Structure formats: structure tokens, C-alpha cells
Length: 164
View 1 (cartoon, rainbow, N blue to C red):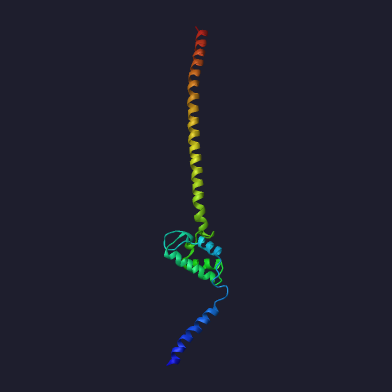
View 2 (tube, helix red, strand yellow):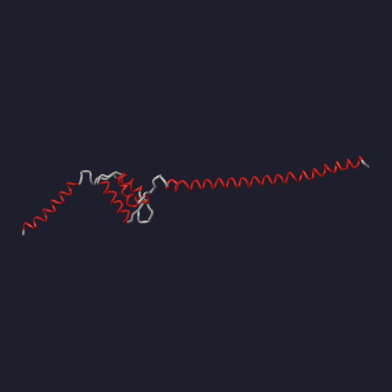
């Protein structure tokens, strides 16, 4: 009976020693700079939309524990980021990768705004130009009408004098 009670603690001690010996020497040493870079590159996934480094809810804490755990196991920043992308998709990234549709989604609004601004500029420029031209035509036609009439009146008088 005593032997049974000794076997359990002995098994626990041996199991703990085995687990501790399997953990590498670098385990537990996490580069805080890399951890911060990863947290700044990820978005919390509880729909708060905050960057992980500034979020303080349970989901953010859980994600931070995963980051620390994976870094302590010797994984690189890219591997940890890849892990989160494999679970949550690209929506977990604070800045989506510059490829495919992501480029289009980022560039298109700026192109549309630029094109709209140019369109408005050219339309307004044309309206203003046509308005100026019309005003010039009106101004130039009025004096010509009066000048033309007076010229013809003088000519008429001269012609009438010849034949009287």
C-alpha cells in the first residue's frame, strides 16, 4: 500500500522533470521588440477594430498569450503572423498585403477622387470659357450694329445727294 502512494508522486515528479527537460534553454525568453511589432501588426478579433497593442479586452489578452507562447517556442515573427493569418485570414492584419484585390481596394478611391476632380475642373473651365465667349460676342455685336448702321446711313446720304 505504501508503494502505491510512492508511485504516484514519483510519477508526477518524473513527468515534470521530463517536461522541463524537453523545454529548450531559450524558452521563456521573448524579445519584447518583436512581440510589440507583432501586436502592432495585428487587429483584435472581437470586432472592436483596435490594433492588438492598444486593445485591453479578453480576446486581445488571449492573442497576446499566443504570441508570447509561440515566440518562446522559437518561432519567428513571420511564423507567428502566418499562424494568425491561417486562423483568421487577412482581416487579422492591420495592413493587408499589397497584392491582388488589396491593391485595387487601396488605389481605386484615390484614382476616382482625382478623376472626379479633373472632370469638375474641366467642366467648370468649359462653362466659364463659354460664358466669357458669349459675353464677348454680345459686347462685340452691339457696337458693330450701331457702327454699321451709322456707316450705312452716311453712305445712303451720300448716294442720295448724287442723284438729287
